[in-house]
Amino acid sequence: MTHQALKFSKHQETEIVEALQTYFSDNLEPITQLQAYLLLDFILKTIGPEIYNLAIEESYAYLQAKLEDLFVLQK
Image (tube, rainbow, N blue to C red):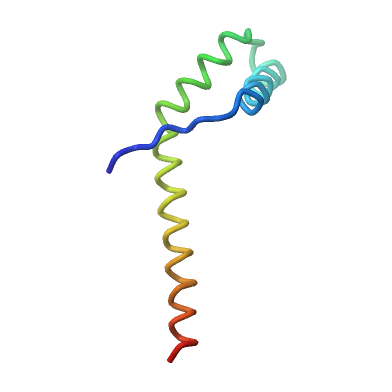
């Protein structure tokens, strides 16, 4: 199965980078904005496709269950 890359708007990306910086400042050592962008890029490339595919699978299962409910009503 082909993996779909996750993409965020510039605004969303900025918010995530700021959240990463806050997390590191509060729990580890502060990181620069560049380091946070690089970390986000790494996370998206390594686990992003798996998260995307999992979400698609869960959506498919949900929709399939709803369609089965509709077919029960039809009988």
